[in-house]
Image 1 (cartoon, rainbow, N blue to C red):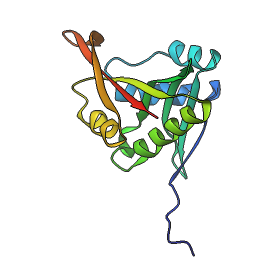
Image 2 (spheres, helix red, strand yellow):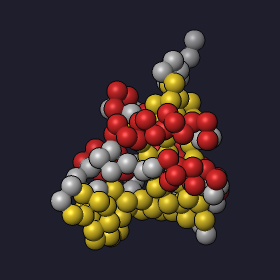
Image 3 (cartoon, helix red, strand yellow):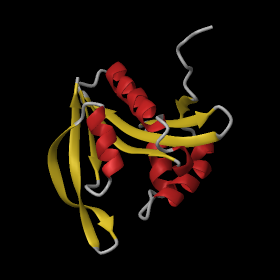
Image 4 (cartoon, rainbow, N blue to C red):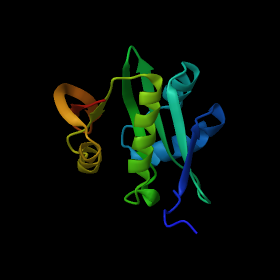
Length: 154
């Protein structure tokens, strides 16, 4: 018997058949969610689109990353509310980082809302560092919210 616990999730490529479940989670989690068209276009454009499935729960999260010119750009990483704070996001982020490395990326970029303390903590713990700010990047309830730009260099 192995002393190393097995991961509670598995990762696989996102397909158009996953999009209804992805949108259900996206709409539950975010005040300003991506649309079905955003996800469909990402899959069809050949972005690195992934889903995370629990052993018994079905789809519990998803990620979208653009890979080009030696860089990865993480566009969306989401874990459904009931499965947050259980390590799924950390393991999913590591999967995406490995995917970017395997592609030959030299770094991964992402944007995160300054109000997203859990996301900022997750990215910092995985070695990301803030490299800039995009002013008025995100829609917000009262105008726009800045984005913190983070990068992880390999």
